[in-house]
Length: 268
Image (cartoon, rainbow, N blue to C red; front, side, top):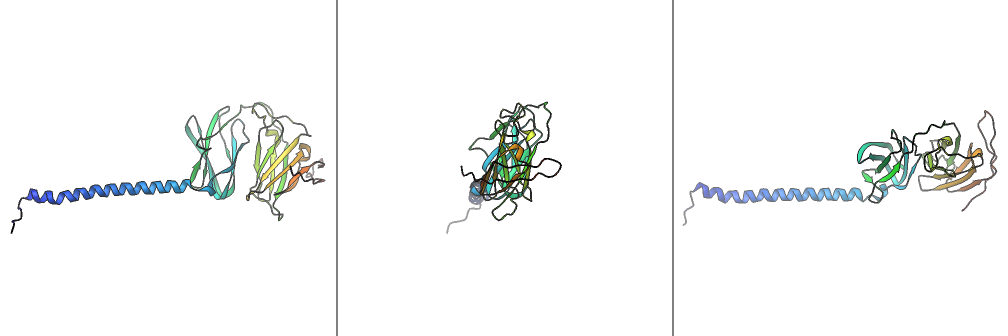
């Protein structure tokens, strides 16, 4: 029989080597596991096509604010992070989950370039690898008046299309937008409209053609063309239908305007 070594140093070496290797392997295993989890989480978060913003539009740009609107395929929380000179300034959030999103970024500086990203659910989206960009206009001294246009949008079952995105365009004017209320009604003050270069308030006549584009929560679209003077109100629009309100008339006076509607479908 061989005698066991009574050298305590030798005994320590025999037992410490596998212990040391075990610790190293444990650390490597934890690191690999963390990397795997993080990678998987990142992949899962980025692979959310139902949360991906669609129909992204920038509207209502003035000297101190701009609006961002978009749609998603499932109800999500929405927010916008925006920057100036690579410095994060703030985020505007939309708390209720929705398929339709419309946010206004406020308290900005005149004639300043901004870049932003859209937060949708747990993800942050840019414009194909680069931030979305816009630039505010100068502060104008022109006196603003009230020139309200308004209307109502419903679905095919005549139910109010709450939250529908309403886009307005006028010849020579920058894009405008608003949203429908719970009862399907919407309104916008055309006197806020600016030229496409944002340097002046837009000018238009009462006969100028206002184009209305409405987007519903299921992707339904309704469009209308109407003279500015007759858009008080724009006759009721049904999602999925296109209109040319050629002979719409309004009643002047203190009473709420009403319409004598000539519904002409415009399939173009």
